[in-house]
Length: 120
Image (cartoon, rainbow, N blue to C red; front, side):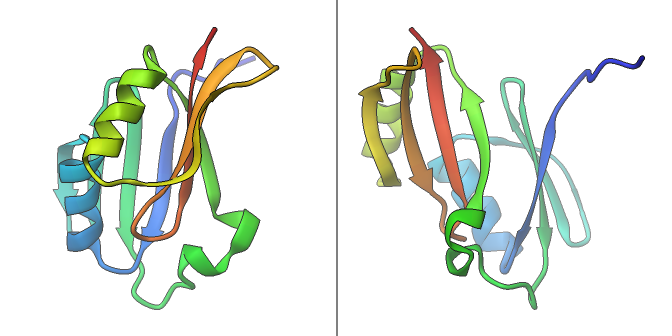
């Protein structure tokens, strides 16, 4: 049986330039590679591919289907403070949960929702 060795999320975005700017300037990711219609980004072991899909349904219109990932981080409080200072829209404030995680949620400019959590 083959093991999974890495995870890379792929997101459809309406405006690649605006979304790339948001993920780099606001969320602190680094551009690894670009190709026509695509931006590949990362921060630590988190990997993301943005694909421009100008005719796609905006994620903000997908309701609960706009969730796309849960990212485990080393310091949720520090990341929350970083994102708060950057003006990120939060869907959930930083809180300790009964399942043993300190977590918070954000909504990107495209409407995708991401959870970030730290094991307690």
